Length: 272
Image 1 (cartoon, rainbow, N blue to C red):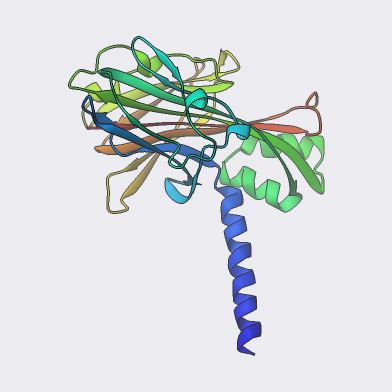
Image 2: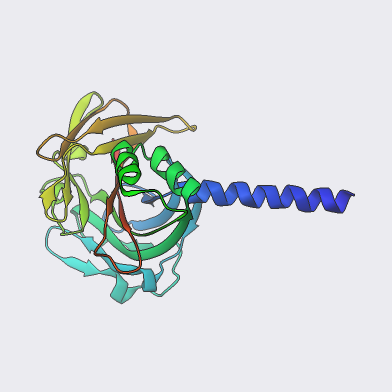
């Protein structure tokens, strides 16, 4: 009887974990420090979770990674060419430069099949009301097939200066978050504008979220929609770790093997 109960409990736990992971779409960079001094060691963890609650850490998966760069004011370092596969943390490197730097990774497509209920729940979780309406118009299916990829960024600085404009550098990712102000020069209460670019063009009327972790599990969230220029505005009301994120899904009849294409983007930084 105890063995049956234990197996039942384990099965339920595994199902719950699978449901949670299915809704946990965000990948983001967590750094040991966002402000370092020359000669310090930078440690970068690639975390997976939802609403800034990490559920697991990913190693570097070269077969799933299109690009991974460390960009400084005068060089672009191809980290994929230097790092071993399955490295975890994904980066551990002594910094030998000063100034601002941008970490940027693109992860390749992953293909998935979802039931009608799973797909609907995912759209509701992401508050994609327009896609829910489109799906009703197109006709719901018992099984939905989609592919998704990711853009992951983080901004850091080495030394006392935070000069330059790397925070708003456009890298050409499919769906990309661009900061329009330098967060290292902001203080609590200041506004931050972010621009969303979708395949080279501003993405209008898109929900973007900003999460803040001030420590001790005090996670706050702000929501904003982009204007006609693809710009969303947030008030950085607390110090600490910030994550800007969005999920963008579109119907893709020309895509091979799938009907939907999904792109997730995150940009992490710290408000000192």
